[in-house]
Image (cartoon, rainbow over all chains, first blue to last red; front, side):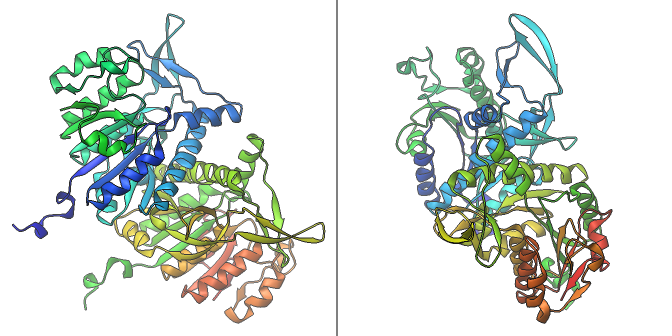
Length: 280
Length: 280
């Protein structure tokens, strides 16, 4: 079989990059680096967060965010229907639109979509979530968050093959067709898995997983898949979801996951050179 | 040539439907009717507005909208950069997302995009707009509105051929890659033209163009292309843009334009039966 008989999708390496929304990560540097990468013929998908924007909009409209912690120590946004609509406005309406604009400015034909669009990401709604508040366990209902079950690879491949760079906002559609807020790190992991990406890059505001957070000199440079469970114990706060996502991506067939610094110049190529925590 | 040798795009009739954002138009009835239409094998593209939501969000965040009137009597939203971001949040983030959700709920695989995505709609920015205020002419600068020059038909055909129903938010990208607010009626007209649609349907909160607005018994049932200029004089307020859009659509090769009532049961099929102002 000659190369041109292969589907286009298999000819190039695929990279999925998650850009943090909370932490002063340099979107402009990431976009510039993404444009350079695309010129080398790589297939690229971006997934973004937007917590900071959602928080700011919630405050501005008089409906501030509420964060809850699960018994196992994971923090997440409590998302009633009104919060979901604020989240959609901020994340899908502002962050996604302006990121697409920024990429268009430097010649990347970006196309923004959320997980609702074309059923890109179908999630199972967590209708009741257990939380710990003031030391007491409680159950919250009417929460519109979910865990992704399925990603529409056909849609992504259709867009990639047609020359567009998908920019994904972390909303999903439930099995009952409700809009759901999903974790962007784990969304990126599921997207990378379904595309069998060579690399999943999780860019954040630290150099990688730190053994002794926030001491940046304690960067863990390499983690094998078998060490992920102990890495999960080391990870603090939102880093836990990145480690969880890394495990899900590797299980799904992704070549490597790199948790790396999004504050530096050339953040994508820097990470691809192995700077960060490489998990494989 | 047998039918299955034709490109899919040419096998079915194409309908572009604009749903008004301001006027109490029944989105739910339109969605139900759209789902029924899709089952008959038609190709359907939806374009929506969202002025009411943008106004409400502007008020909520303490940055209320400002409307301006041109010397020739057209009213439009004055859109500085902050207003543009509010507009994007409301229209792309809320109206588009929730419309896609509503369509997904009834089995339509909707996919929301704005004109920025994949350069779907490229517009010329009106950097200076002339307005009349308190009887005086003024020039406003820093306005982020535009007039659409080009629609990416390939993207729409790619999505339609893959089985998705595009739902378009009225944002465009300028030739300098800036995000712009565009008029949704005229966006729908340009989309219909580039797809050579059989029908462009402009659904609103009146039964069509009224000779003596707001007297609904003065509905004009038929207008020929040559009568559009006088129709433009009859049209009041935002109806002017619908008449302008109708002219642009017909010039672009659209079969017919129907301005019809979006408040009734089965608004799409009702209009397709000729109820409304049929322009051809």
